[in-house]
Length: 601
Image (spheres, rainbow, N blue to C red):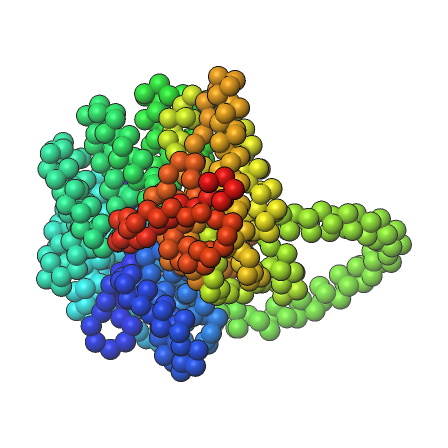
């Protein structure tokens, strides 16, 4: 269990440092969207602030890379790579996080900026902590603490002390952990940093739990969760909920342990926190095994393996554990190499002459064989090319696939009106308990194949499936005037399919799923995530609101937002049932409507 205070204070200019702030990020994104002719320096400043303050790792990564792509100025690149490394760490890409953070460190050292050198040391400590390289982690945290004491930066010093304490806590060295938590707690109180206060409360709760004082542990962790909920810090909440599960498990209160673990998984899933997705799926697998739910345990364990394997291979991180030391040594080695270069050059010339004559002979023999091989290879390449083309189009929209092939990359784009659909099977766990693991997978696959065909029928893009959730979008990558109507028609057809499927399975005496479905329309940013295992994905508040439409819907119905209703209200094919304002977590009161076809009303 690790609670690393990853997004440390970062000075973005002269004056007061500041911490992660989602409201500020949202405000600046709106400014960025509305300001087409903003001065380059101001735009870079906004991108820097957004990438640092955004609570969602995917969005933070997007804006940090956008910042790096738009400048070659070291003062902005040091921030861009720092924020990229922090986001990649949250997403579980530890190798990528190391590379980005070392780039930030190089720029900071070249600029002589001790503050940013300390920041980089702190994040490197975080990354090595997660990878299990304890010595590297404590070394970097200690380096960071020395710098922040030297420059009298009490704000970031508090984060460094906390994270070193967390490292000791995870090594069960409570004697070393407690003084670090004590000092950081005082500093966080002095500067009024609520998230830091919450993390100290939570981690001291973990200390109390390890000392056997469950009552004090629960009190501290509950206080921490309450503060983090106000701050919308889902990373910390997910971890502490998982630890609450451990506490109740130690008391043999399996239902309470299961409840906390499921809440932790829900938060990790909705916010793309891969570390927690892996760990919490494993925890749920263990809990269900103890409850005798073998099939459900097996499914959670499979999800644990899938998410664990999606994180970069830890072996590669261990091999990089001495990367920074190697970098330092390489700087010294340059001087030695220059002194020996003349002698080496003479040897290389002699060796190259002999090797060249030998290779000419080999090449003469090989040319004939090569020509024959090329003819056969061309035929195989054409077959593989066709196969690759088909696979790429199965993963990405046609327009995006063409851009990717032409340019080697595909730019992220903003869309003003995209209609997004989410589905989710209600009481999935209870229904899944009645099926074997194989039956469960086959049934989900049967439903999602049908949804794929429906999306094709109405010219919609399937975005992704995660677990028992299905996401699709209309109006991307090519805007369409009929996308909203087609999405609603598709949603109605999906619900009709699930209803008929339920009747069929019940007639056979088998359990069946019931489904909620929600639709919302609004602006998004769309693009490709990563450079391996491409995924075309969407970002923006519209996505979150569409998810809320699903979670606040009812089984068998299509729940739509006010914005979607306004676009379809005059369409004679539909009948709308006004639901009034419904309180939605994180959104307040939202107007919602159920929609159906007039011919069936």
